[in-house]
Structure formats: structure tokens, C-alpha cells
Image (cartoon, rainbow, N blue to C red; front, side):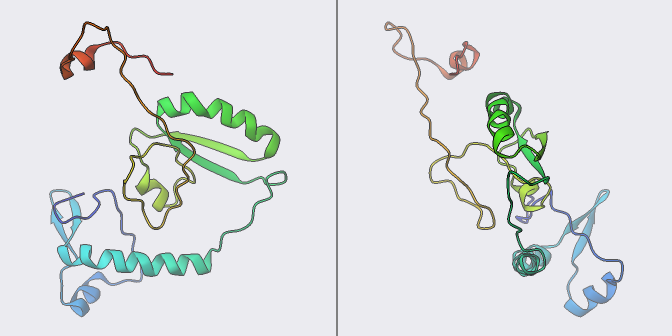
Length: 177
């Protein structure tokens, strides 16, 4: 997020026929400003963005309705994004199970260094992003989130240790199961 509350990763793509000057004059507001070598949205543009996004999402739902999928016959391609550790843990088992249920489905795995992959999901660049979330975390209204399982982390230590400073904890060896 930038200082205006707009996503710094968002991109606005205008069709060639849009005359930016006429639009700026019509709205009586500057829509973007130059900052070093890039264009940044103005405060007004950031305020307009959520309403425009809702309108475009509604239009997209009507123009591109979700098609039903028959897993045994489908030859669709599914793009999955996840962190490297998540891929190591779940991808082999997931592929093993899906091989029987959807043998012709194609999967493309993308490693993402961040969690969650909201920008990529909202932009339609990926279809699925397994990851973790915290209880009470705000969920995005345009995305479906499925709780697969919950987990609890515990710290096991020597009985004589009464405390563990953060620095020592961070450099200590950790076991994950």
C-alpha cells in the first residue's frame, strides 16, 4: 500500500481509445501524477477505485460466467501459487489424489514469496493459493476461502529453562511436523 491507501502493485490498463486528457478535464481532477519514473494514482483516483472495481467485477461476472467443470473429462489448466514450503508439503499428495479424480487437468505451479496471493488472485493470474490465515483475519469479499484444517504450534523445551529470549528462540533449531 502507498501513502494514499492504494495498492502499489495494482495496474490500470486503459483502452487505446480513452483520451486521458479529456477524461481528466471531464472529471475536473488529476487522475495520476508522476513520481520518479512511474505514474501514481491521485487521492481522487484511489477513492474512485473501489467503486469502479465493483462495477467491473459485476460486469465481468455477467460477461464471463463460471463454467461447470467435469473433473474426469476436463482439460482445463489450473494455476496454483504457493510458498515453497507449502509446495513441498502438500503439492505431491495433492497431485497424487487429483491424478485419479481429474486425470486430464493441467496444473501450473508458481512459487510466491508472500502469503496471501491476493493481488494475483484478484487479477485472475492464478486460480488457487493454498496458504495460512490467522483467526479473525479480514477476508476479501471477492474471494472464496475454504478452511481445510487448523493447527496449533507448541514450544517444547528443557524443564530447567524458565524463559527463552526471542533472539535465542530465533537462532535455535526448530522441528516442524
